[in-house]
Length: 474
Image 1 (spheres, rainbow, N blue to C red):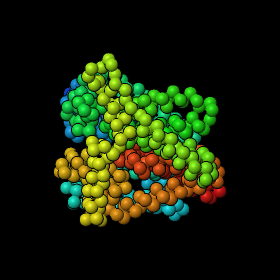
Image 2: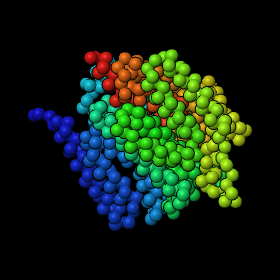
Image 3: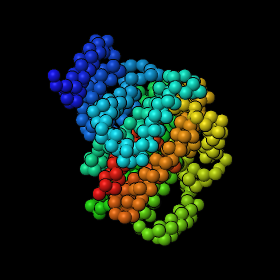
Image 4: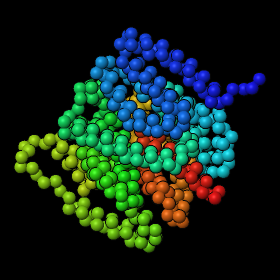
């Protein structure tokens, strides 16, 4: 008897899932449970799209930036819950697509594993992260499982990236720009017109201290946090700059760039603004393709920027007698950029957090577990573990996954950036140049463990690795 094909098995499994979900969907309607209706509806629609890897990747990339907004919309009729199932819809579908690849494309995965060291490093890192779920130092297995959401699930996007074509990846880049514009506009709406009732409700029940700048709430747009919002704008802004430079007919993107950058300024995101400026400057500098010119241009840009920044000041307004939210956010941004070493600067808090994380790494070289230092510890562990700041990405990562995991992460970044840089110098490849810039900025600013930007980073890493492997064969 012939065995069923992978496509047939996938279809049968999905039909069984549809029957189960239909039951819960009907139950949600009867009980007027909007949250369940949302979850089942999302699983049915996105699950159908995820039957194909490419359409699944694109649909989830669209969904993730708006996931938290949909969650907050539910609060218009349903109360806040600490563990919201809406937040695991994308995780379940990511695991579904990875499982399909693992079960039915194992031969191809093993081939890539043998041919490319980055694939090997990431696979070993994934195994280390799986083991870290059970690390007792983080406070329990629930903390580890919750931490897997921020580490293991985004890493699975690396393997999805191996199946994305160059044409589809270019579409994804434009999609990221479009989402950046839409979310920046909504973030600006929050600044100028305020928050909706369900957003205020979320701030009261699910918000966090860092949302506030003075007495005002900073914009978070459609994202789960202000950090996620600004990190996404940073990445989409860098991509926008790259496409403007790439072709003259892309000058219309200057409007998109203006909206994204203004959104960054009004979000009072000093780190993301610097990340955007560093990334954009690096992309322009690499365009010189001559080491001496690159060095001279870098020195000139640093010198001119230092002079301009030193002259920046926020004029007093004769109209406003009190600080408005707009003025407060701009002052917060300007003060951080013009005087980053002030006593009140969060830079010192970040150094303190990095110092604390460094000594934790020395005392626990095998790592403390995936849940330490993020929402996993806050929801399932101790408050002390939750408040460890996620600063200086590599040190914070080593605190979770241990020194060996940190070394693998460094090797992954080193080889990927080096290979892309060499390929760019030899072939003047636009995508290699863009990948060097994006991953250099991620190395400085982080973003691998966030809902919406983590998958983008790992997807780009997988796609770039496949491209470089194919180029080496040629």
